[in-house]
Image (cartoon, rainbow, N blue to C red):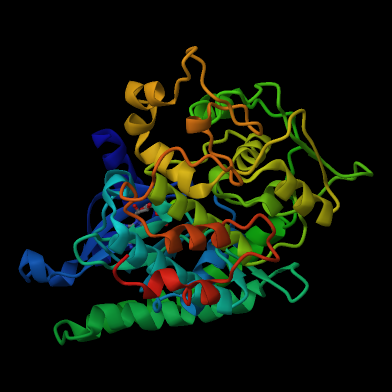
Length: 469
Ligand code: ADP
Ligand code: MG
């Protein structure tokens, strides 16, 4: 990891030498699929004490990234970012096909370290902040498309929250189709602002060596504007858009899912596979960007018209993680397995109805009853309680057998069905989350995207107003 750290540092400095003229680059602070993110401070602030130096996150895009992707991200950060919990950008530095975004650095907690210990108030604040960010993004008819914990910067101590990584964001038209941005204009505009920002950043309070810096900037500025405009246009011409390789739907290997959910539903049949198809077997072109476990049914079903409801589902998955203390909650290796995970929780009827609406057919070898989200969450959170021998013994009949639920054939104490009449275990007093939390959860995770709650509506949900329980 130290090696990788140094590799990332060297790569940035070698591919964009200008960075080293402006910043001291210290270490790698993160890396996603498409970039390395490094911590930098301004050289001109070296004289200041360590604590008063401003810190920046320098996102170095992999040179293999499509310029369209980089520009889209840049455009989003300029137009949308900087307010309402959405990350902003200070400046962009580019050299040939290497691009680095400079953003304010924010120290944050790793979701992995904190999701198990988030209480009601913290979940409430976290979800409120996330929905504020989404409400803002969605006002621009933009789908973020990659809402997940690693793209959220959250500091537990300060409560600060930033939605970041607009690398997959898409603008949608009124009919739900994807709008291609006017790249050359956007690039020019972005760069102009970039230069203003860069100058601001470096000259803010300094008078020393002013002429020198001015000269440097004015020369670089022109060069850089020209370079980006020309270079990107060229790169775009070479790599035409819309060459998305849509992978054919494969029959899912659901074994992993079944193993994961076995605890919840031990009777689930490993041969229960799902296969979203459409009648005429035409290739379906629909956007599928994102991470499998956070993709909503409409994306998994390849619905060509998608809306901002895509992000709301992802927010629901995050909330489900916090209420169940189970991360990642959905962990499918591919879309089919992801859809069967959803069917296992929300039932086959819901998913089939939504699929039908989108002209898709979902084939199943087994029916699945919808689970009660509260029971499900508590099962994961209080696993030890539910499977204790004590509980088992209490539910054994005299002959040693246990009464089974007619729907899921589970022992009644183990049944998680939504419409069950078995009230064996008392949840009250065990659950730290109020009923409102589960109500909001079910609205965020509404299978039908047309009925799914919007960020704006969700913020008015009683979960956010009941401050006590
Ligand atoms: P990618 O597009 O490669 O996924 P991200 O923008 O998601 O890149 O950044 C990758 C990681 O870098 C994040 O998960 C986060 O840990 C870290 N990171 C990104 N931006 C910042 C920032 N402004 N401050 C602190 N850390 C950041
Ligand atoms: Mg990311």
